[in-house]
Amino acid sequence: MSDTKPFLDQRVMDLVNTYILSNANPETKVAHHLPPEKLRSQIDLTLPENGCSLDELYKTIEQYLTFSVRTGHRQFFNQLWSGFTLPGLLGELFASLANTSMYTYEVAPVATLMEKELIKKLGGICGFENPEGLFVTGGSNGNLQAMMIARNRALPHVKSKGYSNAAELIAFVSEEAHYSFEKSANVLGLGSTNLRKIKTDDTGRMIPEELAMAIEESLEKGKQPFFVGATAGTTVKGAFDPLEDIAPIAKQHDLWFHVDGALGGTVILSPRHRHLLEGLDKADSFAWNAHKLMGLPLMCSILLVREKGHLWKTNSVSGTDYIFHDESYGAYDLGPISLQCGRRVDALKLWLSWKYYGDKGYTERVDRFFELAAYAEDIVNHAPSLELMAPRSSVNVCFRYVPNTSEDIDKFNLRLREELARKGKALVNFARLGEDVAIRLVIANHELTREDVSLFFDSLIQTAESLT
Ligand SMILES: Cc1ncc(COP(=O)(O)O)c(C=O)c1O
Image (cartoon, rainbow, N blue to C red):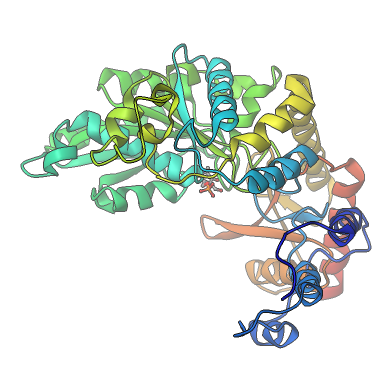
């Protein structure tokens, strides 16, 4: 190990640019999947007593890129995110270069002001008049913190005295809600049976009448309802719960009304599609993942709260005077309202990206996603061998291939997906809709074109035919 100063050399630019360019090449494999033992034999993973040279390090970085899944490839549809914006990448790089933490204005002055500006902007778009908020570690964490605020509101003494003599709390989400709510119920000591999962209709939207009945039922059982979590963009079907109808039910029972917009929050940036989030202005809190449809490098998540004060009430603790000093710019510090101590600068990449594309750029992006998802749905509807498995609400298209053999249809679709991945042609996920396996195509990469979507289905059908 010879270098002491971490200067970047031309190799970094070459590696980055070659990687980005080859993502765009349809000949490039999406993934080089190897079983763990084989992969282990390709890369020297041991950590030595004496450090290695920079050359060796670059060699390992190349191997890292070679064997990592190309999530920015235009045939990567496996998650609810894909690709990244260049300003987002720059934000990630320069946030690491300046390497600070979001707890005080003193150590993160620009980032603090940027984060506050973004919260104001996002809050305004959601119809929150006096919003507060924070960048959090992910949508799961946003959901957890929203539930924690709701719990502390329902049981004002829980923060100091715990659950002693408290009524049994119960929260409500839909049966299609993300699993992070169950984790939240676990972390907060509610118990998973006190997370009531409300029935959905065939599009995947929570049925408000079922919610109202479940609340009444739990009251009859002596429980204390405290939280309703609606979803704007469900994980599998991309469905939007009817916020406008759920809001009055939550209000009638004085429950905290949270909206999980981890996937679909970004849709509010499109005048054409924001009706899907009608009623959001009545929510008490909103979780939003900018690393999904806004195309920022992971992670980039925000928790917004409609009224100021809740985050401080929930997250403030004693023993902080070593770090938060009223004498300097304490009023600007974000640390006291955060659950974390050290916190990454995730605001910079979103701020840079929004500055670069503007509102208009993001509106166009959302509209293009919907247009491409409709195009994909159309292909499914017109291909005799494909079957749509759920009505499409937004950017998720759930379908399956119907083989003309006697093979079990679920097993065939799992085999098909594996084969596509093994060949490196496309990576696409699956989920179970009831008993059935459905392939879940997600349109989330801003570089996608109709040709890419067609190529995906061509590869899928060709591969399926080769398997029958
Ligand atoms: C609807 C929904 N909520 C929450 C989450 C969790 O987000 P994160 O992975 O950022 O924790 C996801 C993840 O895909 C999601 O789909």
